[in-house]
Amino acid sequence: MKSRLFIAALTLALALPVAADFTTVQQAYEVALSDVRLPRSESGTIAYKTCATCSYETRQIDANTRWLVDGKSVPLKKFREAVQRVTEPNKEAVTVLHHLETNRVTQVSVYL
Image (cartoon, rainbow, N blue to C red):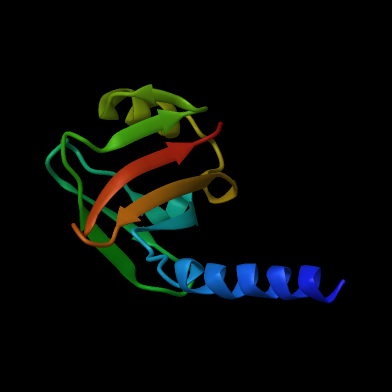
């Protein structure tokens, strides 16, 4: 019984340094659609508020930024058309993925 306990403790002790090596690569924000300012082109910027009382944060996007509507990838133009049809944008949530190293938005998704 003591040997099993010792082996379990040893296994956990060896696993702790591995768990400590995690680094955050992307930050996800869920914001109200009314708090998002979409870019006009694929090489522009997107602005969003991370909370109702926060200031807008502006981030670069590029041609690799993914635009998702109901889980399906669409071009930016189709994304803009979809969200413009929303009648109550303050009740719809948008998820924005911000890559921390490149300081770019990599994905924007909405479920309507």
